[in-house]
Length: 323
Image (cartoon, rainbow, N blue to C red):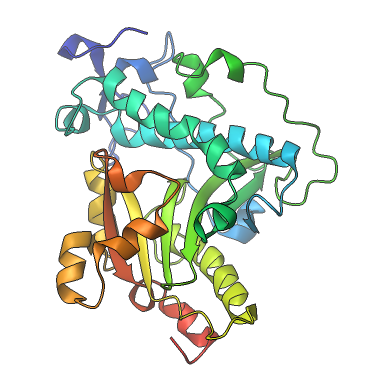
């Protein structure tokens, strides 16, 4: 596909959201406008409460708890969501022009496409056997009959980022699935990795319709489902000595996503180097370890921010007294 840089290849989002709103008239790359439309076709879906949307949250340890066909269906849904989510964050001139390694729409989205293509591998790999780490996925599902469902555009295929081998993906018919809700839409997902040895978890990949800063129904309450499951697994382990409490949470954040990094700051996340100054008992190696299998520790496109679990997920403190 062609890569564009000039102002002629940017256009204002003229009718969505409604005129007068904070986001009205926001300039976006012309690639996210379907032919004949004055507003972009990115998903502007915003969830209400779980009861209003029929939302169901699932957490599973991967790959063991999902069948092969379910993992393929999940990977396809995650890739579609991740790429659409990344478009929403990055298909704006102020992000593209300030990106640390690429200054074109095509270049920036190619970076995120590499990440999307790796999701298949991440769902298939046995992190415990390979690295001594435990890997989970948490996902939101909503029935397709909800009011104003999210956009169904598969941007990776539309913009020709998807490889030819992905065109004929057979994801099955949903029979016997326990995690992927057949006939539902994936609204949010996160791949979470836990190091039982250090008590650190890493949010390594994710795509969200939830709002990052919403403290009642945003991204952090969603991720709390994964932490609750991990904490339950930790308590169920019979090792001696027992695994340490989950104390630190890291987020791998695209360096171009300044808005996301600012939003995470509201929850106490700070860059890794700054965090280590305040926690001299830790070092870079323990954070590199919990990211193994994702490559973020060696990837200049991603930065790592860290916070104390008790600062981010205060509600989890009631689950035990050893935190």
